[in-house]
Length: 354
Image (cartoon, rainbow, N blue to C red; front, side, top):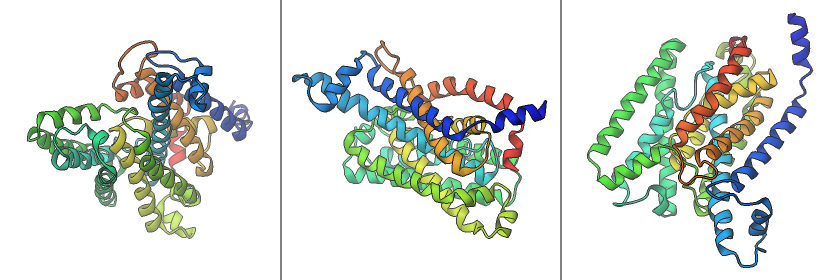
């Protein structure tokens, strides 16, 4: 029976799966642009994009200035959080590691809270009214907060086992959360309201002007991850074994966590703390491709993360209805059943982490 199952698994063609993911990504991206409080036919979307809609400026503004940047933000954010989770699961050799569980999102939130609740001008609507230097400051603050938490977690990782490390990550999340609560307690009401709105998570807050910084940070980080494929494969076997293979363990660990901080921190800074994507997409890809090789998992996680993010955003904005649900609630509702089924069917998950 096991031989038959193994033979079935070996017949899976990565190229076919990548093509399937690519088609799904294109379809959900188009659906995200077309569907919303008002359904826009695909032909009208195309005419608005090429500017030949006979002067329908309202349609052009909805498509070009609202829906397209929102879908593009979901595309980049989902890919970045997914790869960030994959990096952390490999470095910690823990299937439960992700930016949210280990407190990295909380650290990024603290950095943003310091900027928005303490340093930003009164009444600021988060990143909407910040100038170019303000966007850079938000990205720097969120990435620095994420990196600081990761550094502390890594120091603990040298002394405790994996389960203890997860508990320590949760404790750090609570500690950082209390600092944010204290900042909110002493902040102005309008700033607190803005911070609450930001903490629900949304892909709708990034404009084309902000997209230059948002996309630049994420694209540079995601491109750099591909150069770590082989070192990450070695790290999955344990740091001692990786060192015996010639891997520079310390530099690989620092670079990997630095990139994870940049990706998670940038997304958190612009879109709010979005949970679940970082842990869901890598597990889904391991189930689909039945491999732990990072040359496959990295591009697969990029695509799967984007698909989940776009699907969650589509569900959050409820086609045909006004308003939008909190993104964090939707990502968990959509992704949890998928991952539960994948984990139950992938019974040898432990082997993928040594």
